[in-house]
Image 1 (tube, one colour):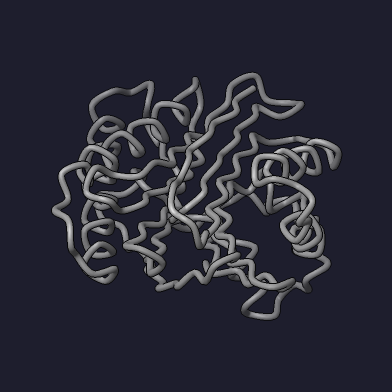
Image 2: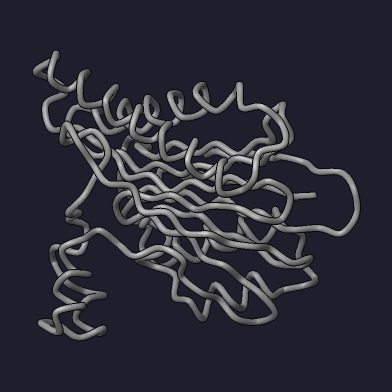
Amino acid sequence: MMNCVYVSDVGRVRSVNEDSTWVNPLESGYTLAIVADGMGGHQAGDIASRMAVETITEDLGALPAGLSAEACGEELKRAILHANEVVYRKAAEHVEYHSMGTTVVAGIFAGNDGVIAHIGDSRAYHFRQGRIVQLTDDHSLVNELLKNKQISEEEATVHPHRNVVTRALGTDERVEVDLNRVSLEPGDILLLCSDGLSNYVTPEQMVLTLGSDDLGLKDRADQLLQLALNAGGDDNISVALLEQQEDAGSGIKEWNS
């Protein structure tokens, strides 16, 4: 079973938290987790991320039991594409929401096998036995420059346009969703986060925090959040942790500030 927690914070600079986070078991027995990081003026980002999460969760709420992880992933992709239509339509119909959109990273699990779907630069990481692997590839300007070897890793971390995404949910009529399979063994942790965490907390810090066996899962999420705040907290910060357990029982906890 999964032990799951999530935490979201407005940060030290922003006045509105444009992130939306959702982690819950579905009635059919699957585990679903979503982190969405909204963008757009006049609080439109807040609306975009919330609409995306609401659409995805509503679409997947009636999933029948017994589907494979691959089938669940296809349903997740379909729900995300539906969310893109919903947010895009809202932006087109209301001038105050013009150009609003959101990133999304989501994971759905059937037992210990799951699929990660994402658009934008919110990330998924897989932690196992002292090692962490980034499962998602940022759809961002800086990542394109990095892949084309136009900038270095060091330059990427301080690039003035590191928050510019090249793909987002709701900004265009059609969008492509990236899918990745993942399997969690007992003790593994899946980390989903907005760039308010990944831009300020290094993979090494993530490993040290997630590997702290003396801390509960909630405390590890809190510590990751605090690390981002200590590094400046210039953006909204959202963290979802899913830990694969051997024993029965699962719990979902939320902390917002």
